[in-house]
Image (cartoon, rainbow, N blue to C red):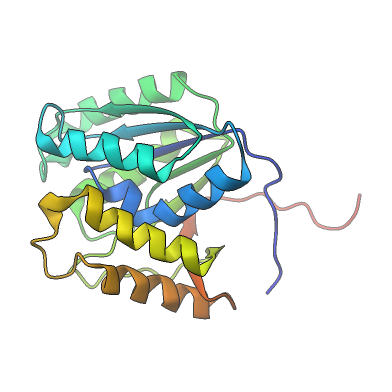
Length: 216
């Protein structure tokens, strides 16, 4: 497998429809980036959960997943499960979020996610971040919508294990779900590792990439 590099990354943006989406989808990538890029700036936008215990979980979790980084988190109060009915609010929020940062990479849900909140966010994200490398993460859940990804970020075993541990530690409200446990998260990262010749990995769907071929 041919490995491509983004080069140094000083700033990223990541968006989620719900508190925990970002950590589930790319928690290992956050841990790895923060270790490799001292002083990384992380801008996060979450559409729902403002003013609830879920917001407190999210802020504590993202601090834990981004050690040493400067983290800016915005949590909105768009109703969970009703995002398509709030299209204009989501579009406006993404517009303002775009104006607040200049990321090298943008992360969000992937377009074929079965959950309507995730899917709408994935569709709108490239309309604001039009000239950016945009990668769609996968969110483990009970729907059978696991994507066929085309971008892989290898993870050290310790990073994959730390991601799974932090998810269960910082999102206690979600441990009631039968799929929300360390075994499930490690199972998916092991599978993605197999697919890119690594022990563990996180996988993404690339929105659009311009590739310059050759040495000139």
